[in-house]
Structure formats: structure tokens, C-alpha cells
Amino acid sequence: MVSAEETAASPPTLADALARLALAEDTLRAIGAGEVDAFVVDDGTHDTMLFSLSTADRPYRLFVESMRDGAATLSSSGIILYANDRLAEMLACTRQSIVGSALADHLAGDLPAAVTRPQAGVWPRAVVEATLLDERGVHVPVLIGSAPLDLERDGLTCLTFTDLTAQKAQDREIARLSVAQELRMAELQAAHEALTVQATHDALTGLPNRGLLVDRIDQALAQARRSGVCTAVYFVDLDGFKRVNDTMGHAAGDLVLQSVARRLSAALRPGDTVARIGGDEFVVLTPGLAGPERATTVSDRLMVELARMSDESPQPIAASIGVSTSVAGRDDAEVLLHEADRAMYEAKSLGGTRVALFDPAFTLLTDQRTDTQGMIEAALDDGRLIAHYQPIIDLPGGAVAGYEALARIRTVGGDILPPSAFIDVAESSGQITPLGAQMLHLACVEADRWGALVPGPGPIVAVNLSGRQFEGGSMHTVVAEALAASGLPPSRLHLELTETAIIDLHPDNLIQLEAIAEMGVQIGLDDFGTGYASLSHLRRLPLSFVKIDQSFVQGIGLSREDEQIVLAVVDLAANLEMRSIAEGVQTPRQLERLTEMGCDQAQGYLIARPMPAGDLPRPPTHRAGIAT
Ligand code: C2E
Ligand code: MG
Ligand code: MG
Image (cartoon, rainbow, N blue to C red):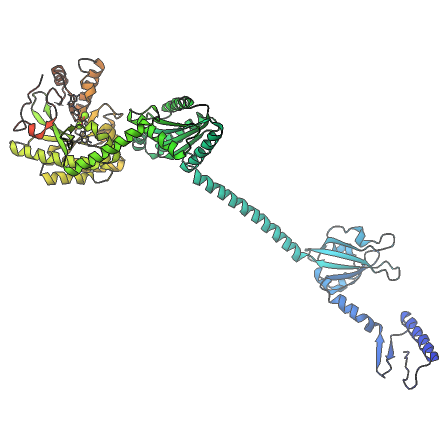
């Protein structure tokens, strides 16, 4: 061991300094040649320090050992000369097993030559991504950084390995999240679009609903304002749809509505709109018509298209169409819709299955309707609803079996109004319900009085009912109350419903009809032959009699067909154990033929006109004096 020592007793001379320098040079050379293990340094304060190769190297070693990255020294041939603990950990093996092995053995795939081989004798600095293969075969993604460590032209290189496992996992998670996010966004977008469609379209037919229709009419009107073209709105209401629903079920009704939607759409141009705004109510919008007269062409086309539906539908389906047109200037969607609705109502009241164009005069009719409603209300409040009675006689023989009660309104001025002046308005306004109930009470009280005047069971009273009276669900109670209040035996009360009213009855309401029949009250069909029902179809209803409509009765002697129809109905009724009653008998010939046919009863001007209760013969059962 060589030691270097000096004293601090006298100040150093130049010769001393040179000697010390020579000594230091010698020491360094000796260390470089490996001739010394360590040397002692005195810093002049008599503190000495022992320097060895390992003491000088230790900080660097410790630094490399404790790095969070892996580190290795590589020979020019790619052999690992040194590896730190972290690299051993990354490769899941010991440092000893790494040192001396080829770096290539620890890699999945090849590394770029830039990292593993010096080029032109010089190691380039490079950073590359690679994958280590650990002892268990697990892939470890790393970032390899290389730097030349070419101390004495020995071609060494120093590598650092940064573990990318966590970062890669994070990248993958971010990618997964962003895919999930995109999916979620797409789902949200789709849900939003579905909601928009749902909010603006009818679920059954997929057609625009009222809200979207109004928007489109507004747009069409705005465009019409600019260009002066005409916008037309067609209110299409199906005739007889309720019957399809009630007799064939709602599923069949839905199919009809879908079919109507298809037919209407097929009859239109691409820029037109068909919307469904209610049960069987559709509205068509045709913007940009050259003039209002073109609207009729469109409505005719719609009618033709709907008429073709009869091939598809087991029940006849037709429509009433109300048309309203707007030329530039009048620009309110709601007004246009209201006018088309009003025109449709007009088409219905003219018998339906037709087109009506809106006419400002309709507004006048609306005013009249309002007046009539007020008049009915006042009449019901003031007891000015009265009944006239028309006798019904037995055939043959002519004995009076009873009377049909027919509604009349006495005006404040004392005039007597027939049902044609108020029944339709009462039907559509719903006033038919209180009106019908009052009629029932009046007729029952009157009929009970007749019973007291004559021996025997007494004449019956027939009262007309509207299908709407069943809507409240308590018609059987109304009947029971009228009977209880008057004391009239149920067997002396007959109720007449038109076949349309019966067919239009909701299946739930049939229960009320059955409850009424169970009380002992007879129920019959009025105006038979004017609707779509067949007697056999109505067989399941609790019916006791059929009134043959006067249009057929009056054809007796004039039309062979009418006579055949009357005969067929009389026979069928007999076979189904129902009584047949001929209405509107006006001539002795008609009465004679009806008697020959076997018709059970008759009623008509020939026998007597409807009259106030006070004009009935006393007692009110007798052989009717037949007028000629
Ligand atoms: P409906 O029930 O078929 O009554 C018979 C109608 O024919 C009565 O007309 C009667 O006056 C008329 N009539 C009777 N015999 C003859 C005849 O020989 N020739 C002609 N041309 N007509 C005859 P009205 O009283 O005007 O009643 C018309 C309709 O109004 C009734 O037809 C019935 O459907 C309805 N109605 C009358 N009262 C009521 C009621 O209280 N409630 C309901 N819902 N409807 C009623
Ligand atoms: Mg009647
Ligand atoms: Mg009738």
C-alpha cells in the first residue's frame, strides 16, 4: 500500500508543490494500472481519508441500483455485462442469470439495430418501444433508451428500460372508455331521435301526429305567403269504423287504420303530409297547390283510394272528407284545421262517404247548432219536452197493443217541434242522455195511467233510446228508476234502438242491455234495414221485436224488391222468435199485404198519427179506427 502524507508545519514551497503533483500523478497512474487498492488523503487539517476504487464508484452504483427503471450494460456483441435489480425484477429472474446472456434472448421480437449495434463504431442515442419476455413468458412492454458508454473504444452501450405496463394498461383503459363513451353517445343520440319520433308521430301508423302536422301546416302557409301558392287541408274521418272495432275487435280495427294510413300516403306526392290526429281521424296536407280548385282533384283521389280498401276490409270502410284551402294571406294552421273539420262534419251530416268543401256559411250552421242546444236545455229545464203517442196495432184484427212515445218540444211561443228539429243536435251534444231519461219517465208515468183505466194487462209503451244513453254505464239503473217511480210493470215497457245504435254499442254496454232485458223489459230493433246488421248477427242480443223501416213498407205494392225484403224480414223474425212490426203503414193495401205476409203488428198514419196523450181515445185500448 502506498500512502501519501504531508505535514502542515511550514508553508509549502514550489518544490513541495511539484513533488506533490508528481506524487499525485504517480498515484493516479498506479490506481489506473490496478497497482494500488486505495490511498489516504490528508486535507491539511490532519484529517485523513481512505480512497479506494469501490469508494469512488459507490455513489454511481447505488444510483443505478436504486433506479426505478431497469438498467444494463451491453457489450458490442449484445451480451449483457451488467444488469440492475429492477431489470432482473422486470424479467422475473436473478441478476446472475441475466449477466452473460444475450439481450435478444429477453426480447419478444427484434430490436432496431440502432439500439443493439453500434453503427460506424459509434453507438447512437435512441429511444424505442420494445417488449421484454420475462422468464414466465409474460410480455412486458418497455421503453428502451440507449446511450454509448464507449469508454475505451470497447463498444459498450448503456441501456435503460422503462416499464410501460401501467401506461399501456392506462392507454387501453382510455381507449376502452372512449369506445364506451362513443357507444353511449350513439345510444343517447338514438334514444333522443326515438323520443323525438315518439313525440311527433303516432305509434300505431307511424304517421305524424297533430303537433307535427300543425308545424307543417304553418311551414306550408309561410311558403304560400311568399310564393302565392295554395295550401289545402283535408280532414278525413272514417265512416263505420266504430262498427269494425266493436264487431271485429280492436286488433282488426288497428289493421284497418294502418291500411288507411298506407292508402292515403300512397295517393299523395312526396312533399305532402298524412297525419293521424285521433282514433279514426286523419288529416292530409298538400302544400304548394296551383289553386284551390286543385284540392278537389286530391280529395277525389283520396276517396278512390279508400274505396279500394273494401277489398281488404271485411267490413265496408268509407270516409267523409272535409276540405279547407288557403291562399296567401290567411295563415293560421288551427283555423285551416278547424274549417276542414267543420266541412267534414258537414259531409257526415249529408249522409257521409262524400267530400265537402269548407264554406263560410257553415259558421252560420254552427251558430244555429248552438242556438238549438240552448233551446233543448231550456226545454228540459222548463218541462217543455213532451211525448206524442202513436198506436201500434196487432195483425190481424187491429187491436191496439200499445203506443210509441215520440219526443216533441213545445217552444216558448207554443209551437210543437218534431224530433228532426233537435234530436241530431241532442245526439251530438250529449243532451240526448237527459232528454232520453225524461222521455222514459214521461212515457212510463203516462202508460201506468192507461193501465189503471182498463182491465187486463194494459197497453204497452215503446220508448226510443239512443246508443249514447248507454255511455254512462248506468242505463239499466235509469230504466229501473223510471219503472219504480211510475209503478209501470216492466213487461209493459218496450225499448227501441236503431240497429246502428245497437251495433255501435261498446261490448261493455251490452251488459246493460242484458240487465234491462232481465228486468222483463222488451228490447227491439228500430228502422231495421237501414243499417248494416243482419238479423242472425244480432241473434246473440236480447231482442224481442224488429221494426221494419218505413222505406220498405211504403214500397209494398210499388216495388217487388221492397216487398220481398219485407217478406224476408217477417219470415226471419218469426224463425228467430221475434215479433215483426211494420212502421209507416199509409195505405190499406200495405196493411192487407202485411197481414197476408204474417207481419205481427203495424204502425203508421193509416192507423193514426202521433198525438198528445190528451187526444188518445178513452180508454186508450180499442180497435183503432183505421183512417183511409
Ligand atoms: P222512429 O222511432 O222510427 O219513429 C217513427 C217515426 O215515423 C215518427 O216520426 C213517426 O211520426 C213517423 N211516422 C209514423 N207513421 C208514419 C207514416 O205513416 N208515414 C210517415 N212518413 N212517417 C210516419 P217522428 O216522431 O218525427 O220521430 C222521428 C224519429 O225521431 C223517430 O223515428 C226516432 O228515431 C226519433 N225519436 C223520436 N223520439 C225520440 C226519443 O224520445 N228518443 C230518441 N232517441 N229518438 C227519438
Ligand atoms: Mg221508434
Ligand atoms: Mg222507426
